[in-house]
Length: 281
Length: 281
Image (cartoon, rainbow over the protein chains, first blue to last red):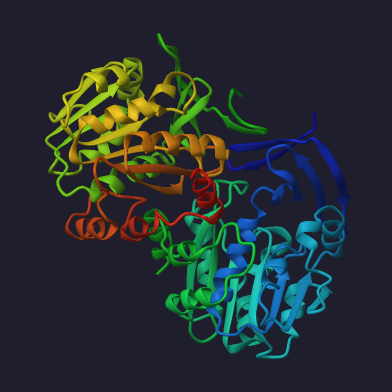
């Protein structure tokens, strides 16, 4: 039986494959979509699992709803990356959203997601969505200033193709493209990863944003089983009580991970991780 | 290179082994202690990793401190299982503890932990500790009623040797052995496991205890990366504000996972897991 193998440091994770849906070399990267009896369909880019049907809801709900609930009225949003569509699906649950630009560098990710991951790609045909197949760095540099309420950076890891999406210059450009009360969010890796990697990301976010807060959740199919996201404010960071109020007034439909308790608690970080982040100063 | 392989459903986790410290067949089970460059030393019983030096602190801190901080004055405690010593090490941080009975079914686990996992076994020589190498079921049936302030069940999974430690009869016997304001806690598996398994555990705890609450944390080396524990009250369950007050007055030394934020937030469960547990009623 064919097996997909992901390595992380000296650990090896194997997913026996029941079905190979597609294996494709795009202009930029290898894309595979497979099926495993425990995790369902899963998307691989180069050597890493990007998402599985088992737990993609955690990553996408946490990345979308925690920041969205912190914004008083999100209307115009930009997603950099996220070509599978899962994040857009969650963002589009907010009736206040008038425009979502999704800037994905590799059109083939979106094409294959439409075909093999329809529950993720379901939002692409929403009339509020504009798809741009372009480099997020270029896109953000040429974006009009103060044009977005929110920017979501749904990228791969900070090596290879996505590395520039973790640079201080990129974060500063994102800040410039946000309105005054705008909110930025990016995935910020596993709390269990090396201090140097994690501190580096946080330090560079600081080059663009004066205020930031990191939150976390359980994502079984990412190495070491937990993941973090970092939310940052263009000028200030709206407060959690406001987000809890927003959730009381509007429950995004169909949530499987986020609820008021998770919203209230996801910024409470384990001691070892707080210590890693604190040592940057 | 030798590799330790753990399977969970259709997922395979592999740990390349740098050093085999010991492989031993006890009267009851296979015990292995190995070394891997990412997780450090790790203890295997039969086919499953019990703990690793990387993240044992999460399991043991969460299992010890969350319930201990809920008890007004824990003096007399029983640990069923936990023969590696990590849980005892955490419990013994409380000066109020006068007596800790550790009832481990397999003396060889403790012998090998003393030899190869000294940072876990460090508490065994504390004069407050009594080691009993006996079946926890027998021990609890013959325990005097109302003899313990707290009972901790630090067991393997509910198949094989540990299965009786997940029975309604056992939970009822634990309740009888607790004082009126006594607190019980057990590991209650991964929130990602099947509903039937998880509901079964919770239903059976209800046969012994009128009140219970489940909490969770990030344990990378358990399958699917998160774990839960369930705390239950002999008569009533002390409230979280009391536990937060207790933590203000006494910080157990050397904590790497638990802090006031984790204590305050660990009972906030993801929506999918709350739904699994709710469906039992």
